[in-house]
Image (cartoon, rainbow over all chains, first blue to last red; front, side, top):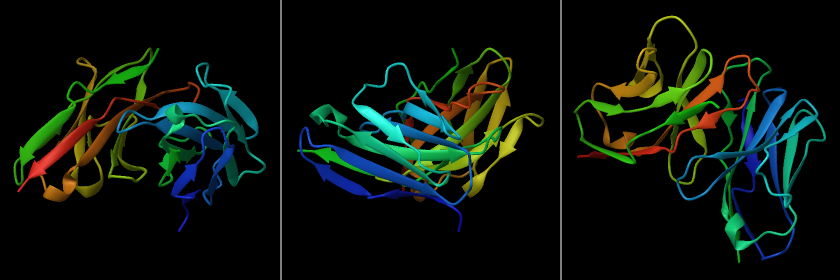
Length: 112
Length: 114
């Protein structure tokens, strides 16, 4: 089945140690999003790609970076995770001009 | 700026009773509106959307939503709640012709009691 896959589902990282979360999709959508969601709050958009065009939200900390090497894959890099970065990270895709977004299962990040 | 508001943090309803989860929106033009559901430690699942046309939209799992332009509302409804409907529900808006951003409300926790 076509889908959005996030790996791993659970990630534990040490304070200050770089960590990468991955997302892949088989939908061939050209828009990919990364959201941060803390403890049942609303998902907060960090950035999104329109094909290879990167769009950063104004309030996304510099600590968060992203890479999209091809249509199928997108990575979220947290350069120096702090305790406040512990959250669920959600990847989503949509087609250009498309309507709804399709979400992966999320990666729950714990910072110790 | 576009936004959605979900005025209730939690909604409690008895199984078999109708449920309503409220959402109001604010956009400069005509909106795309969505409802998503989230179960614990899972991603968001799409329930339904409003684009244009009929104000009553039917979606997955027996849910429906009514678009009301005059009240700028898009309330989620189900005629008969199930215990398995207990989850976190998010309303979202996307601006037509905008930047493709999907903006979420703060979420409403639905608790259905047996």
